[in-house]
Image (cartoon, rainbow, N blue to C red; front, top):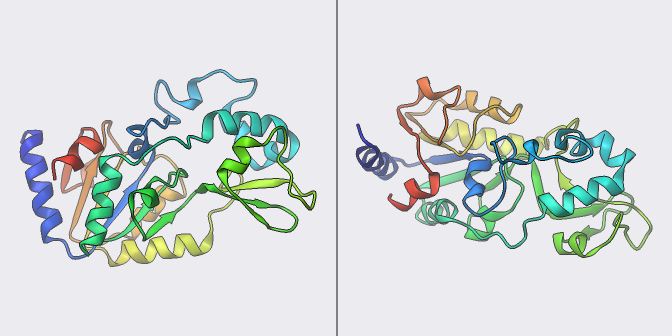
Length: 240
């Protein structure tokens, strides 16, 4: 079966679905110009004084906060990025009553920018930042325009509402994602290698009718998929 035939089958599956859930990763946002972490050109393969895995950790945030923010401002705040065809199609499917939830590992807020409402951000969002003392809210623009360590007017350090290494996922977000996945009759996995846990572990809650994987490279669940498309997710969604 060639890709055109697979996309036609995908369109049929989407049309027949009554409760579609999308589970996505970094590959959904790379087509909006946001760098992947683990690809050849991703953040993990660029040279910094410390490995990105170390910088983006809870321990490093508190031990070397200024160095954390130097990296964070330059590499994590891609505020000019716009939703691509995948984001837009998912928002369209939600508006039509087909899609019941987006479960994302991304922290860029592009699903909401495209119009999606039911988004479970497993790893948080760069668009939300809070004082660690008084919990006052700050925007991503506030962080980008600040220098050194961003401080609240109360004097507290401001921290992004993103899940760093060594930190746990938000229980309410996880519970919502699990409910959506359990109630889905169709799940589309897109733009993720499924190597990041515990996020990828949520897929075990899916017991619906059809599992669809759209990813350029192989994943550990390819053999379980009812439909597998190794192509650009934006290209595929544009053709639905």
